[in-house]
Length: 396
Image (cartoon, rainbow, N blue to C red; front, side):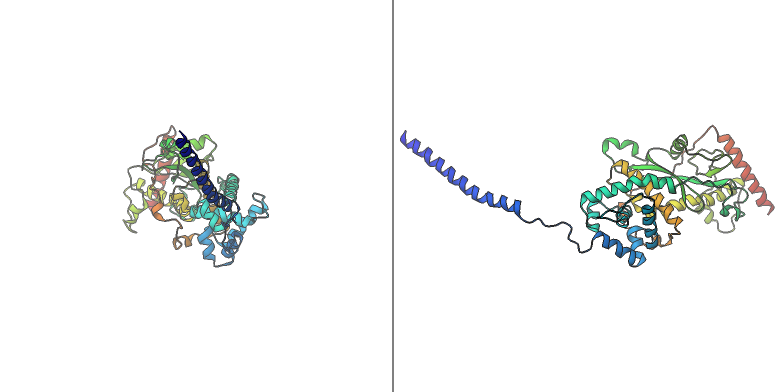
């Protein structure tokens, strides 16, 4: 019995010695971790404010690449935001830097981590500033994306005998375009388009100066272009009496939305292959060619928009409510830049900033025929225009 008690005492003593050794190992380590000097995360010698100054004062190609606009236009936009009270300078960040962070984000599809590195701010600050900017996008869209109010035909129509006087009541063109999204799997099915990718279907209208006059965002990728248009009409989109937009064959042909003749050559590439000596088989071919030339303005506008802001070709990881605002932001800045006489030819020579391998495959347009209760009236108006063109074509 005594030997067993002795063994237990030795065992307990050994455990105490082991605990003492562990104590002397752990305590210094914990102390060091608590009281050691933290290494700063943002150690770049160039602050975000300095980056902005470099971009604006350096060669204009830098500003074009980073912010997708010329330096003088960047300054003008910042001044407008300050003058209108849409954003405010703070002790830590000027409106110029705030604008630069947002433009860099939508120009490069930059994550919060990349923006922290580029502008030397905390993740919380970047998140807050991006959220603040998205908060003013509805106001910018309302101010810079407006339905046409002109009563006179556009000079591009009046000055071209191919279009005048046949399209004298045309005020623009409409098309749908898909923009990739990312969304949780349980919410994904409605957003899956016919290509099998996830997108939102965005309706856009433009005038003949390549400015966007209307945008409707947020429709699921499975929605048809015609369905998005019908929703826009129910929510306040209006066409003045006697005026109309040009649309493609995926829309119903009505007095307000004139579509081309179906089953007849339409795409411009088809007519280019014929060369300069194009001979039209009938009034439908003649009408479709002129219609395609004029409606091409919306395709050109969308092409410029996606070259300037290639974020519209890739998925992002912002909340879906924010992703829906990205096309509106791009369209608003597109119109602001054009209103300040910004150029877009340089976009062909500048890199997109986003690797094309990240681009999402998207549908290009609807081909399903749409019928409306107003289709008969639309067909009569289209025939009237086409026959007038055909008669003049044969006479001259």
